[in-house]
Length: 588
Image 1 (cartoon, rainbow, N blue to C red):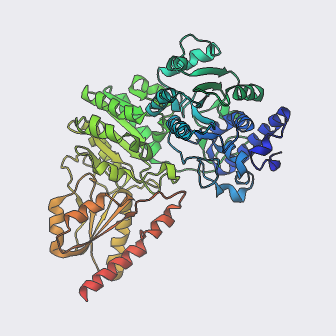
Image 2 (spheres, rainbow, N blue to C red):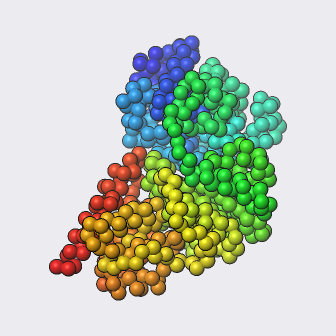
Image 3 (cartoon, rainbow, N blue to C red):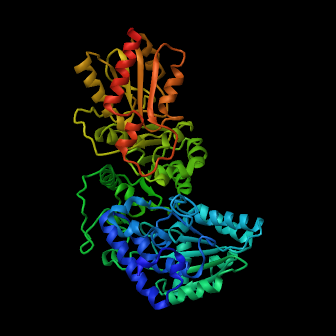
């Protein structure tokens, strides 16, 4: 049947019984692709019937659909002319895992962060009303995303608009892991009473409220959608679904199957053998630290997987583990308060999500110098590569905030040495930027547990003519460049591990011009406003040429890390060629 669905209009020609058959077919198509390709599994399997019913009743793209976080948009893509990207293995990567206007007129926004759909939909409705148009605006949001502060702001102002905005609340009783927070107690009461609970947060705000107990019943969905279509005021439809619907092991282990690598669709066994990573090593470390330090608390904003804090580790930690839900702004203020009270919070977070909370980093944490610990994961070209999840901006972001000390370890040993230090520091907040890529071990690294000499760079090898400063992930590249310069060109460069990226070592840099004519910096992030440009600015009046390597200010999408680096001159050969050329120019 799917072969005959080229656009949503084809869907409208089907009978209800045929729609049910189509839902089964789409679910199987999803399982086939996801088992071969990986992706967001549980959220999309839960949304099959809701998406079919939406396109059956409404008229996209005239009516506007806004998907929150896009984790649940695969079926929408299938029904809007992109089914080949799900049925033809050679075309799997023709579409992104998120809504994308460049792919289809049915996608309005590029969205990959949570709790955004309500505010975007609110703006669409306002713009529509100002232009005296009359299309429907439909915002989809999961119960997990409802914990985010922006979601509350959107709910509040949708009521203020007081015009057609239809909110679809997909309630599968899960975020990535289990939900946490007071609003979920109300959702539970609403589920238990089939929407009849007297205390209803949505009607209290001002929504017309509808409840659907079985979100996989196409008849119920179509009936309600027809009822609210072309409504004149805000409506919220609370729909209960099963995350991972149709894939047995995904239904039973919803957390694991929120997203996953390619897998055997019959057994659930992974098709990829993964090496131990910094996430798992961090989870082991924090779990052990919690046992010996009752003053320590691990905090997450709905992503316990970022530090491999599985259900067993969470249960063992007890009250020393807190999941605040999808609300990074609250998380930063929360850990600042914990630190002020004299306890020690540690907050692992993805780089892409840390950028959601700039003001709290600045005002609530740094201004107050409260000694919380933040561990930043996937801040690297070797991290997530979807345009909505880039981890390339945190160095520039953090560089502008005073009173935060940001550390950039180069290997496993240095990383855990910095962690040991950060847990003892009591004067200021510390951020540790986990290296990207595979775990690198340096058995010769001398652990001191002391990084109190702030912004003091570490000279690993003394040399002349050229100095190499490699930040975190790229220190290893600098080592390789230094070794080849010695071996093939008889040039012994100075090799520097800065360790600190929130400041510069002015004393060391003042000495560089004495016996160097060229200084190279390589950083794993956006070059504009980054670490290297701070050094270039400091040495601007000296006779040393400074070359900064990094990624230009941009939104690269679904890139291959090695290709992106080479495009920007960041390879051993390219950098050595640049060094030799420039040294020769000077000698000439």
